[in-house]
Image 1 (cartoon, rainbow, N blue to C red):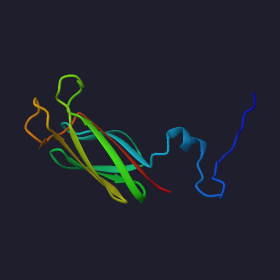
Image 2: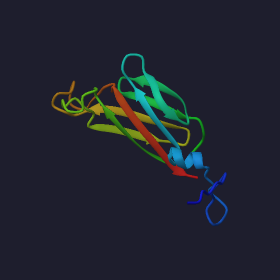
Image 3: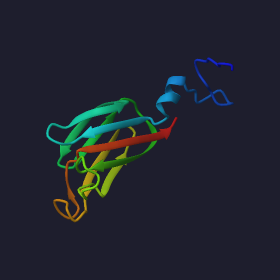
Image 4: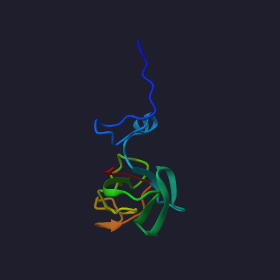
Length: 131
């Protein structure tokens, strides 16, 4: 068995280089795990400079770098039990070049109210973009 060791892998045109560490971490440009309860905190993240808690169920993720044509996805859990119907049905995300704005609302029958914004126990987001 052979081992190939390189510092950077590039596409055929010599652009879009990736290190083995970047490939190992995945090619998401930004990701986060955010706890909105009590004192909001970033539990884990990649290329996030800070998170601003704007209001109940609303926060802004600030990127460490400026991105080109970002798009993102976010998901949330209302509490730490995924099977008791208290979960976030709707998570809205707006991805801009330097930040993402996230809203977490709940439309479930056991939720605080129809489409009411609420802070989640667990909120995850991932941003992809062009290089």
